[in-house]
Image (cartoon, rainbow, N blue to C red):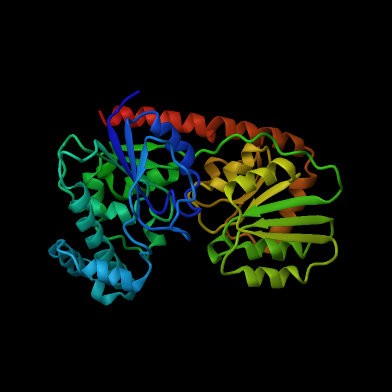
Length: 407
C-alpha cells in the first residue's frame, strides 16, 4: 500500500529508551506510507539513535539537545523571529500573572513553541516538501505548534493522546492553546476510552474526529508456571511518587509466606524503597534490577516464573507494563486508575481501589495467590491480551482508520 509521505513528531524516538512501544506501530506505518520522517523533540541519554528504523524512514536532527536545559530553552526560545502576539494574548486571557504554576507553564510553552514554530517553518515551510500527514505522537510539546501552522487542506494533522499529555489536572490544570489545537487537528487518537470521553466532554468540538487506538504489545510467549513454594511478585515502573512503589514494599513487610519481589526500573524514590526492603523478614527476597531494555524485560518474563504482576500507580493512561504482563498470562493486581479497568478485570486478577493501604494490598496479594481460580486467571490474562492488546491487531486497525481519515 502506498499512501504518500508522513512525518512523525516524537519526544525522543529513535533516541533514548522511552517510547519503546512505538516500534511495532512504526513498522506497520512503514509498510503503508512510501516515505516516513521522524522528527524527535530531543535526544535521549546518547546522541546516537538507540533503535534501528526501517530503510524507508529518515530521522531529522532533534529540535533540542535537551529542552529541559534552561540555557538552551532561553537561547532558542528567544533568539528567533517567530510570532509573539498570540502568546501574550494567552498570557492575559488565562490570568497567568496570578498563578505561579500557570506562569511557569506559560513561560516554558512560550520558549519551547516559538523555537519549534521557527524550526518547522525553516524545514517544512514550503508546500512542495510538506508531507501529506503530520502525526504528533504526543498531545504536548511538539503538537503545541499546531495552532500556529498554516497548512493546505490536503495536509492532515493527527495527534495521539496518552495520559500525562492529556489530563489537564496532571499539568497544573493549565495547557495553553489546547482548544485552538483541537480545532485544527483532523484526527484525535486516544489510547483509552476514558481519555476519549474526558477530552470529548471537555471539548465537544472534537466529537466527530475521535478514535480509540490502544498501545498494543508484542507476543513473546507464555510465562512458565512456578515450581517452588515461594511466590514471585514483579512490578515494573519508574520509581517515582506517582508509581507508589513504596506501597508494594510496605505490604510485603506484612506477609509471612515465602515471597520473592523483583522490581524493574529506577528513579528518585529508590533510596526510600531500599530502606524499606532492608527491614524485610527472612521470608521475603528482593531484587531491584534497575532500568532494563524492553528486550531484557521480555526475556525475563519468558524465563522467570512470575505469579503476580503489581501496579499501584495513583494515575495511569492505559499501562503498557500491564499489557505486557497480560501477554505472558501473568495475573494482575492493579489500582483502578485511568484506563486500567479497560484491560484489567476480575477475570484476569484483581482491580483494587486507588487509595488502597499497604495492609489491604497485603491481603489482596494473599487472596489472589490462594484463589482456587488462580490458574484460570493465567489463562484469562492471555485471552484478554489477545482480544484487546495484541499489537498486530490494534495497529492494523489503526492504520486502516488512518488511511480512511487522511484520504
